[in-house]
Amino acid sequence: MSRAAPILTVLLAIVVIWYLAAIGMNAQWAQDQAARAGTELSTQALIADTMTQDRPVLPTPHQVAVGLWDGLAGQAITSKRSLVWHGWVTLAATLAGFGIGSAAGILLAIGIVHDRAMDQSVMPWAVASQTVPILAIAPMVIVVFASAGVTGLLPKAIISAWLSFFPVLVGMVKGLRTPDAMQLDLMRSWSASRAQIFWRLRLPSAMPYLFASLKVAIAASLVGAIVGELPAGATSGLGARLLSGSYYGQTIQIWSALFTAAALAAILVAAVALVERITLRRMGLAR
Amino acid sequence: MTNAVPILALWLGTWGLNAWLARFDTRATRFLVALIFGLTMLILWEMIVRLYDVPSVILPAPSQIADSIADHPRLLWGDFVQTILKGALSGWIMGAGAAVIVAILIDRSPFLQRGLLPVGNFVAALPIVGIAPILVMWFGFDWQSKAAVVVVMVFFPVLVNMIAGLADTNALQRDQMATWSAGYWQSLLKLRLPAAMPFLFNGLKITTTLALIGAIVAEFFGSPTHGMGFRISTAVGQLDLPLVWAEIVVAAIAGSLFYGIVALVERRVTFWHPSRRT
Image (cartoon, rainbow over all chains, first blue to last red; front, side, top):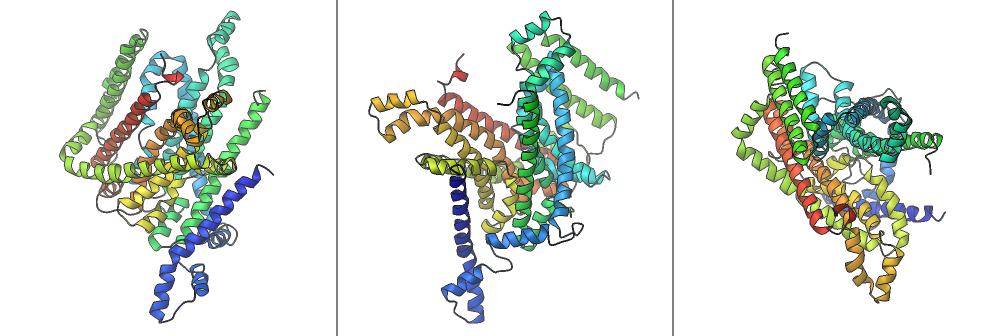
C-alpha cells in the first residue's frame, strides 16, 4: 500500500490536470460555436460542452477511454476500425523485426568477442551509429522496398530489426566480456575448448546484460514499426491510425491509437521482463 | 561472375590487412583498423552499385551522394538550421532544463519521488514519438511543434536520471555537510548537484539522438516547406534518393557532433569521477 499510494496520487494529479487542460483548450471552440449561434453559454454549459465535442483540441480522459473501448472491444477484430486488428499488424512487424534484429546482434557479438580484427573493425562503427538518428531513414526504406515490389510486413520488420540490432549488439558484447581473467584462467586450467568456454562461462554470464538490452530493443522495435507505418500509402497499423487521425482532425482516434501503442509497449517490455525473471531464476542468478 | 572477383578480392585483401594490424593492438592501429574497415565498406558499396548497375532509385552510390551534397549546400544548410538548430536543439535545452528543475523540486518530497519515479520510468519506455501528430495540431507546422515533441521526448529520460543522481550521496557525505552546518542550498550546490552530474550527463547523452529523431519524425506530420524530415519525405516521393541520403549524412554528422559536444562537456564537468581517472 505504501508503494501504491504515491503512484496513485501522481496518476490522479495527471488526470485532474488533463481535465482542466481539456476544459481550457476546448473552451475557445465552444465559445465560437455559441457566438455563431448567437447564444451565451453559462459556465456550467461551457464546461459540459468542452467535454463532449466531436473533434476536441484535447479529448478528455473519459472520451479517450470510450474511444479505446470502442476500438478494442466494440468492433469485430477483423474490422478495419478495430484497434486490435491495427495493433496486431504493428505487433507482427515488431516481433518479426525484434527476432531478426536481436538474433543478428547476438551472432555478431559472438563473432566480435572471438575475433580481434572483427572487434576493432566493427565495434567503433557500431558505437558511433548509436548517435545517428536511424529512424529518419524509415520512410526511405519503405519506399525503396515498395519500388522493388516488396510491401507489407517485411519493410517495417527491417526498420524494427535495424533499431533493435544495435542495443543487443552492444549489450551482448559487454556481457560476453564480463568473465574476468581469473574465471577464464580457471576454464583454461581445466583445458576447456573455446566452445566450452563459450557455452559454460561466457554465455551464462552474459544473460543479465542480454535481457537488459532486449528490453530496450523491443521498445525500440515497436517505435520502428510505428514510424515505418507513417509514410503515405500505409493503411493498416497503429502508425497509419495516427497519420489518418492527424489528416482528418480525429483527435480521439489519435489518442486511442497512442494509448494502444503505449499498452502494447508496456506488455512487450513486461513479457521480456518475465522471461528474464524465469531464466535468471533457473540459472540461479536472480537476486 | 567476373564482377564478383574484384569485390571479393578487395574484401579479402583489406580483411587480411586488418587481421594483421589487429595483432599489434595499440591506439594507432586500432584507429587504423576502424578507418580501413569504414573505407572498405564505402568502396565496396561504390563498386557493387557500379558493377551491377544498381539503379540510383534503389541505392545511390557514395559518389552520387557526395555530388548531391555538393550540389545543394544552401538547401541542406537551411534544412539543418530549421530541424536541428530550431527544432531539436531548442527543444532539447527546454526539455532538459525543465527536467532538471522538476527533479530538484521533487527531490525535496520523498512522497512525490516515490510516485513520479515509476511513472517517469514507464513513460520513458513508451513510443512517445506518437504524440507528434497531436503536438503538430496544437503548435502549428513550424519549428515550435517540433521543439514541443522534442521537449516531451527528452523530459522523462533526463528526469529519471537526474532524480537517481540527486539520490546518489551516501550518509557519510551528508553527515559531513551537516557537521559543517551547511544549509539545504549549500549542500545542494556543493555536494548533491556535482554528485548528480554523471547521471545527468548519462541522460543528456541518451537524449541527443532522441531529440533529432523527434524533430525529424514530427516533420512527417506536417511542416513548412523546408526541414530535414520534410525534405526526406518529399525527395523520396520524387525518387531523388541521392538527396535523401545527403540529408541522412547531414543528420548522421549532426547527431555525432551533438553527442560529441555533450560528451566533451561531460569530461570537463565530471573530471573527478572514477571512470575519468587514468
